[in-house]
Amino acid sequence: MTGVIKKTAAELGALIANREVSAVEVAREHLDRIAAVDDRVHAFLHVDTEGALAAAEAVDARIAAGEQLGPLAGVPIAVKDVLATRGVPTTAGSKILEGWRPPYDATLVERLRAAGTVMLGKTNMDEFAMGSSTEYSAYGPTFNPWDLARIPGGSGGGSAAALAAYEAPLSIGTDTGGSIRQPGAVTGTVGAKPTYGGTSRYGLLAFSSSLDTPGPCARTVEDTALLHAVIAGHDQRDSTSIDAPVPDVVGAARLGATGDLAGVKVGLVREFSGEGAEPGVMSAFRETVEALTKLGAEVVEVSCPHFLYALPAYYLIAPSECSSNLARYDGVRFGLRVGDDGNRSLEEVMSATREAGFGPEVKRRIIIGTYALSSGYYDAYYGQAQKVRTLITRDFTAAFEQVDVLVSPTTPFVAFELGSRTSDPYQMYLADLFTIPTNLYGGPAISVPCGLSEGLPVGFQVMAPILGDDRMYRVAAAVESAVGTFAPPAL
Image 1 (tube, rainbow, N blue to C red):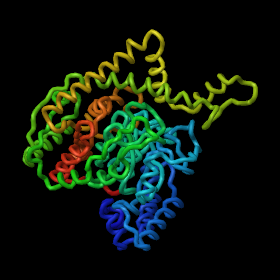
Image 2 (cartoon, helix red, strand yellow):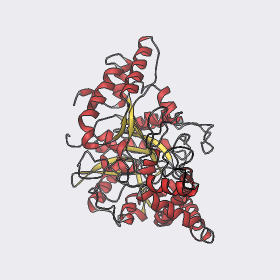
Image 3 (cartoon, rainbow, N blue to C red):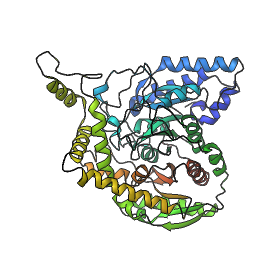
Image 4 (tube, rainbow, N blue to C red):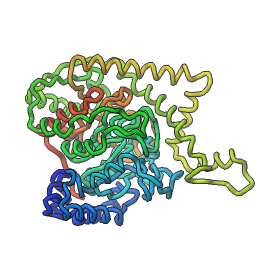
């Protein structure tokens, strides 16, 4: 690997701005890296070589003209294939959208282009973001650069694997129940879920509208914060977007990097004390908590009793919303159409299209969600799950009256082997055991590497109150300063 490939996004941005290296050179290095390793990693579904080089040339021209650009101008980025990108294939990992090229950009993509980032392509994912391992992509799984026999997490495994394989210094993911943080944990990278509504959902192909949150991914906390600052902010086109200033996440990350946590109160969630988690994961987590105390943080135990019910509540709420959102894929308006030979009814064409276009996990969740919303069952299932969601929100509110942030392992286990859990959906769902409560609450959370277990990365999760994104970055950067970063074996 060249020195350019290994540099952070912040370093690359500075080098490009100072004209020590051109944006085109940086883009070519990363495109060459993708060509060299992605046949083994399969992080990308589509590589936009022509578009990336054109964007890089435009940045170089603006710098040559004397323009002062942002800190990420010219820095390559990979985008999860669930965000609409004008003229570039967008499939959400599904056959039902194979070949679709949106006529518009998602708000996040617009902001990335405006900031001068160079989009390398679209990354692989579990179909419609439904999964915890990227094995449910209709285009085949992504492989973990730490061990190609293991999963890279999900649903955004492609975005995380691209970082770990040095195919891109930055990437965008989306987090519905942990799909940014969990891949970050098992690939040794950083993934942040912003406050719900803090990043726009306009142009995001919806899975669960009350949970979906786009967010930044990188190899360092500072890079993640720099990307967060670019993509966050109010958007009038998103009715759930928060009209409030973006917290100073970059300043908080740089403050945390000094290793000073004096005056910060950190809460250990009693209900996540280790039951169901691998011993190696808990050992790395506890050592990191001890490191935080040495940096001046006060660590106390807090109880969030309803967190134990987050998993079942989530798997009623999310499928219910997905069954509604995915009704638009009917073979009539756009995307795949099967069986339209002039002899079949609209209902028959719709049924054939959805049977051919959706994979097994999407079908499973549509069936669960439709059942939960059906007459006579709505109150017993979906309604009860929403009540549990309220109780979980109250747990967070009470906890944040006592502490500044909450911490836990990101996942109960390290990356598992490909194929080992696809036959048991419940075991697959357990991968998101520690991440789901934050989605139901709506607050921000981040995963940062905190050590190794069995030679594989372990993630440390920091959760903060709504619009307290800067708090989580400060603590995450302090973890990074104490523990360091982790790189996989060379591919």
